[in-house]
Image 1 (cartoon, rainbow, N blue to C red):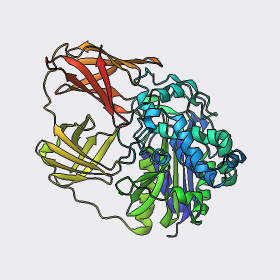
Image 2 (cartoon, rainbow, N blue to C red; image 1 turned 60 degrees about the horizontal axis):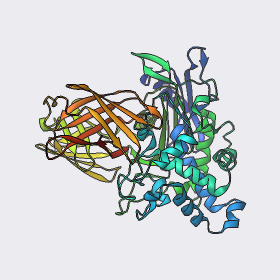
Image 3 (tube, helix red, strand yellow; image 1 turned 45 degrees about the vertical axis):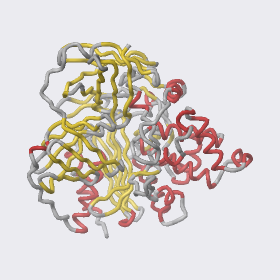
Image 4 (cartoon, one colour; image 1 turned 180 degrees about the vertical axis):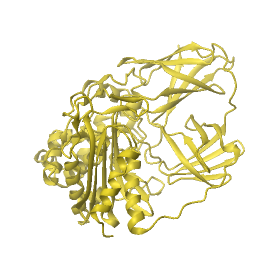
Length: 538
């Protein structure tokens, strides 16, 4: 595939009007060389400072793959301190046991690789921060608050190696293990072992989001609601934390391209697809998501913080890479995929379009996944499409038969009131029953105070009738009230559209349980990132 520079530029110049916001930066590389670049808009709308290829932005979760590169490099090239202690693999395994609560590693089979592949079963700490009283623009300190989060993480929400669920805490732990074992800071390791050889001249670790390098500001909001500067005051290191410019990311893609040619390189090692315990090939491993775009295998990852969205994607067989960096909350992954699809359409021909069929009316409604204790909400999309709300964001399925719909990540079937969803990324089949909606909630049954001993959190349920509020109290303080919506059968949806991290969990499922006398005595609260957290009524 030979790319013509003006054609690539035309594709890139169409992106800003489709993904509207304050500004952004894009790049396309072919054969490791830059063939297209476009920057636009403002790094700071108040001061009228433009975005340039040198503007630094937090690349957020793209940091995860960099942490895995460092870990694998340390295994091959240990520091002097590591060499003195002998077996490197044993050092990492011992550090895992020392870092996590004993209950997480005792007889669970949890291994370091499970953390790298988001198969650990550990609940995500940014989601859990809601239970500890976090405010979206509140502080979260790397030493004190992250340590307290680890102390309160004492159980798993699935068996390690059996499923995939995104978990930032996995990579926070990996970073602390790397620092403990190597005797160096993560920032120094990244600088010496990645940024220097990759010639990422201005990239660095910046753990404190309250002190990101100027001038770039991240913006919340939309064109219709208006854009406001996002206030981020939490600290992170490992799950995110690197700041980089478009120039740095171009250098990174060139470095990865040259590494790909060496089958023994660290990048090729972490880019190999991993497996689940049952042998199923996993779509996520070592901070890299494996996907398909126009029948072409891709490797990539996104990054998000309130006010920022980023994505990098690589198609090794086509020797093609794309970088998208936005200082607003448009969908950077979708933008990166659109650029790749547009390039493929021109140089490989248009993909045949599916002809969706009209869905059965049985699809629409709310269903309950009793195993995970999570609600599934399904609605109509555009013609022949359905929207599925389950994993924190809406997925779109195309109806291929009246009772069957699918996407690249999900296959669903409906049989009357019984829903089956095979979530391919998660390696999980969901069996859910329809909830009889439209009922009025029993008055005053749910109000009260509930406590979870394991995570040291208090849930206050207030309000009345069909308008309840959920508030959480924990070591971070007293959190904001969250609106609750009744769906039926003692099940409510608790809204969390904004959190410390982004995107926030979205909708939590709140399931109240009654005793033999019909009194509410317990409540289970969960989302895809953090399932089945139980609170007893006090």
